[in-house]
Length: 201
Length: 354
Image (tube, rainbow over all chains, first blue to last red; front, side):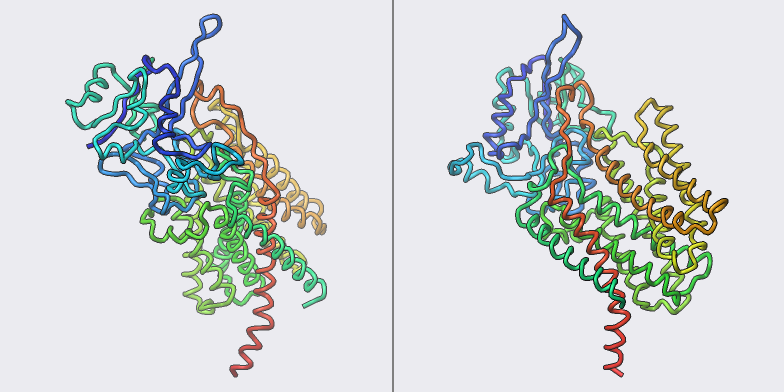
């Protein structure tokens, strides 16, 4: 089994709902963003267009972050999901250096969303799992996936641009769509074998 | 110990203590008090680590080569002193690396991380072994036996090679993330280490009347650095990329001119020896800083995805500068402490025992 994601860039409108949903599900502190929405320009004036590409963690089959982690904090699970264990992380940031997708972030400080105010009950509950001085990343909402649900970003996507499923199952919707549309991973030439595929917009 | 040395030692201890408070502050409050950010994950601390570990490796490699090629034995106080400098540099390097961790008190997790292919793991173990080897030479542990001394020398060379390889890998993993490397990076990292080591030996030899013995290796290594740097520029030009070795090449060329001037014209001018020995150390410190900055300044994602990313500058804070001062003052203090131990404390203890 190897969980993966398919993002249809023809459907993605760059609304950032996935980013907000991710923050809500994971309770990330201010400044920490597991799902990045990169805006970029194609064409030139007067026909230039702004496009968006969501970039979560690619959960690579050959993750460079795992190769460089000296403390064994980065783990690739049997279901293909790559996690970063904050309890083991020593904060060397070698994985951030090695990741070619900017998927990892260092918790420099546990920032609150509302300065000069007490932490909200939501922040109190969610921030407990974040440790200052460690590296965090998208984990495909592993808790939801183990309950048979899809990650928060997939569930929330307004235009249905995201599909989640088992890449090793040829009958899964994701596998069929990848073959049908010729979806490709981002920067396949790096040899990381990402589990996130894109249908080009 | 002369008055000047006592004053210098006292100043180093005070400096170590004062800057040490900054380190304690950083360990308590975290890396958010530094100038590091999401773009520049590594900064002055890592630059200091690379510089000092490179210097320590280089000194030990030079001593090892003298043992193997010239059959130098342990009895020379000059090499014992040089080994103490190497040990102190490695100690300073480990301090700077340790405090750069987000969780410095968990650093020993590297031992149980079960990831021997990680460059940091290789670095950790090789520097640990080199530190032990430098202690062995500094304090003469089993070094009077010529066979063991040879084994020591080969062990130093092997560990230093592995350490240079680990440092190269640390930069090589960044290549897919946008780092514009060049084909001679590993060679330059290794040669820089030797350059620093030979410069320190040459510096220590000035005034002992044996500096001429160390100018030849320094000249050869400087020429090697110059050729490697030039090759890096040529390969960048052929690849249509920005050259990254321009500063190193020009400065190595300048040092080479100084050495040539010393060899051909100003044979008795000690000032040239001093300049030719100090400049490589300064150049290496600047080069490591440039390498760290260049390593990270470009966006990870290729254009056009990074088009709207504003370049974030790296501005080291006073805390980071204080950390570097702490590392350097630890080096100086450790050198003095070792000499005091060897000259006064050990003989006193031995006399009590006897």
